[in-house]
Image (cartoon, rainbow, N blue to C red; front, side, top):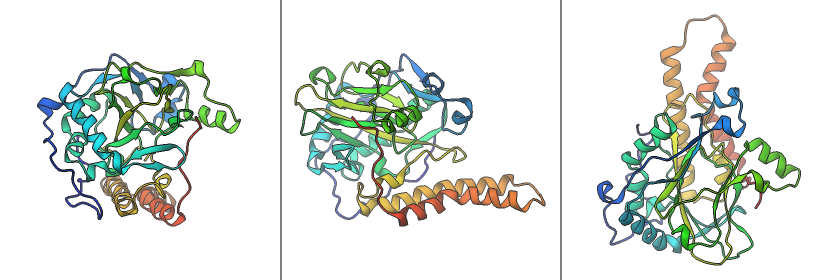
Length: 329
């Protein structure tokens, strides 16, 4: 467990802290329990070669308890107070709040909690850290304004690892289930390309026993959604992102999808720091491990690989908006 990039000590322009919040207390607000089941990427059909380049071979867990009753109540109240900052995330999500950790100290401290991070490390089987980009911390989804659309369309995430937390009580929500596809993202893309929907017989909607329960997710690899409501009601979930602390694995991010969605006051700086962190780690590895060789091209390839994340970030920033990938309702 470690820290990839420190959380900023100052707030971006236009952000203010909520007043009157309780202090986050892990002793009172967490109730961390083990999931009953953990599925692997191989169970979804991924091959060994592809899995070898990813953060972890774990795909997702069954729902497990994360928050105590008191913690779940504070999470719900915090999400309700942040509702006034709702905005769409492209065509994929109608109502979401991102950047909430710049507004709520309680949410920030939950999302950075070393206790939660350690708990997730045991599930993923690797060392992780809260995502270096705070826009990926404490992402909140709210019910849409219409009953005929999904809360969040079928997709794989723009980040490698995360958990999905039930904020409202699932027992009080008609529909709006978290669902995952029992196949690969390549299969989902092929279905979308053919104009076909994810088949119902290959979807799983796990039971969340109550608010404060979560699933650990290899978000970049598991295709999932929050389905449509059956009746209009309050329905809120929260997603918190993580990265593997070793930058040798694939980046597993689509940060360019966030252009036009996230606040420019935060996005460019966070993105640059994330790319710099990965390049710094890879350059340090190169300094420590590069052997003497007369093979110029091999050395060039390793050096290009070390700075590839930073170079790609520059290119994608300059290229501009391209939209948020999804596979439909």
